[in-house]
Image: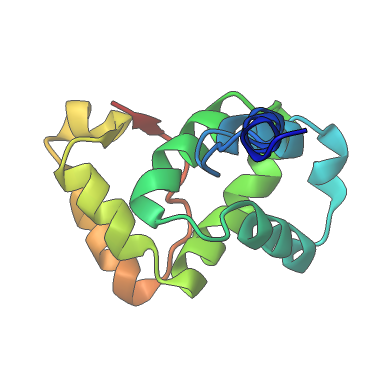
Length: 139
């Protein structure tokens, strides 16, 4: 077989997909499992670190919010307790605030209370990240 045919065959056999292209199916697989509701917080954080490895927060946070919103209720409850602490530990609260300011994501309270959620997120950067996730959505 000639060298060109080998190269062509090799090109066809290995698709060049970015990790971002496979992110939503991976998250749906992770968050779609209701057994996740019984998992340890550190194990959940390790799973999140593995899924988002090599991705920028501005890329994965909107995808995370969409997947979180479509997860089963028990998983949402569990992840609602874990994800804010994980965001705070990883230093992603500033990225989340930047996405809110860019209107790439929103919060249902912003429509009702004139941006009070932005203030709550800014105060969460100093006082803790509890209850950040419920109500966030992708614009």
